[in-house]
Structure formats: structure tokens, C-alpha cells
Length: 317
Image 1 (cartoon, helix red, strand yellow):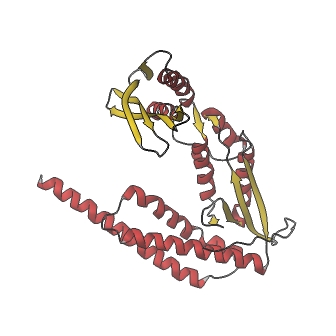
Image 2: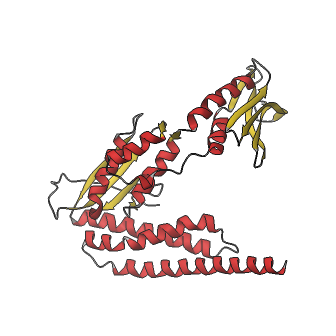
Image 3: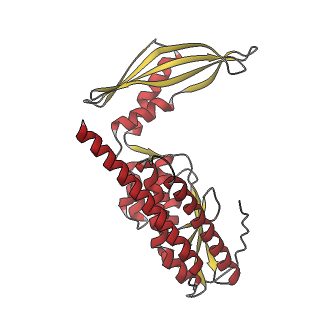
């Protein structure tokens, strides 16, 4: 763990005075129509390639039905008994997805007292793209089913805050950012991307619900350079540790490792931008990046070996 101290001087935006920007933002909970999200990217001058994937009807169904779960419905206040109304997927095939509403009764200590696995059914007909449901009229399950059907219509055309955050993060990642704290949320972006940072902030500010994005210019002085160098070093060290840990696993998951490899590639691709911004050769970090490349190769080799083994097993069968 390391503490951060930000001491930003007021600066004019003249060439040579800025080494980059500190960027931080907050995306509020919201629903954004897909067409509107695309237009906001265009209005901000950003590539629509950052758009989330097309909304699949199956994803909209799962989002809508999961969103209606109810927890902590009081049954007996004195004894602390509550009901949880949960949605569980029972089956999924080429024709439909079937989900049950289940009622779980628990006491004040969290102990399960009873469990009814099918008090309502929610079904997606994949061919027609329609949601159908069956439950007792005027029950809590009935309320849940009706709400799910309404949300299903919305979620087929709207992205939620999670999708919007992924858009912002992908845009930011394209600028070679360095996290300024371990949990993320605050990043340093080299001066090469100042125009793009402005577009990103403009995009965030155009979102509804109190979303906010900020940029703070970082002045070209020793304290600022030391701050950026320290956090860049921490970032590369953390990345190297993660790569080593993954490379040492008996079996590597390609889907879980790919984001890490992509992050490593991005760090190496943008390293020169940091050298230019700090006006230093950063020889010690260059040595660390050699280790990063080595661990990336180890992971690639291990994944390739796993794939070869699977091919051999298929041939033998």
C-alpha cells in the first residue's frame, strides 16, 4: 500500500508547462438508450467503436428478471423472519430460457427455515423474442413478473450504468493511463492524449443522472514528475506480479488472462509517451518491462501447450 499526496499548482496551458492530466470521474446509476449513447460519443468527437456490444435479447431477459428480486420482505417483525424472493435459472436451450421465482424464508440469524422452488415461472421464447410468465395472480411473484416484463422492454434498447462505465474505461485505457491509487478511479494520462482527455470529459459530462468527469493539468516540475514516476513504477510492479502469478498456475485460463496480457501490451506501447512526458530515459523501468515481456511469453507458451494437449486428446478419441 502507498499513500498519495496531490499538490496541484495553478498552471497556464502553454506548451512545455504540462506533462499530462490527472483524470477522475463518477458514472451515476442510469439507463441510456443505445442510440443516444452512440450520439453522445459522436457529439464528443469519440469513435463509436467504443460502443458496447449489441444488446442480445437473452441478456435483456436475464437482466430484467434478475433486477426484480426482492430480499428482506418482513414476515414476522417480532421474530425477525423474512422472505427472500429470488430468481433462479432452471434451463436454457436453443428454444427458450426458463427461470423460476423461489421463496426463501430465513430467521433473524440467517438460518433457512423453508424454501419453495417454484412460485412463478419466467420464460424467454428465443424465436419470437417474447417474455412469458406464469404465477398466482395478485401475489408478490405476480408483481415481480409484471415488473420483469416492463423492464425487459426497456433493457432491449437501453444500456445500464455498468455498460456505460465499461465504455468510459475502454476510452481511458486507449490513452495509456497510470492508476494513481490501487483501487483505480484516478489516473494520470500523458500529455500526448490531452485532446482525447478533453473529449472523454465532455462525453462524461453529457451523461444524465449527475455523472461527472474531471481533468487536472499536471505542472512540469520535479514533484509532479516524481509522483508520476512513482505511480508508473508501482503500476508496472503490480502488473509484473500478476503476470508471474498467472504464469505459475498449473492451468491457465485464456479468457481470464487475456485482459492482463492486453494491459501489459498497452503499458509497453505507451512507455515512450511517459519517457517523453518526464523527459527521462527510465532505464530501470525498461528493465522491468523486459521481465514483463518474459512473463507474457511464458503465459503464451503455456496456453499454446495446453491447446496442443487438447488437440492430441481429440485426435486420440
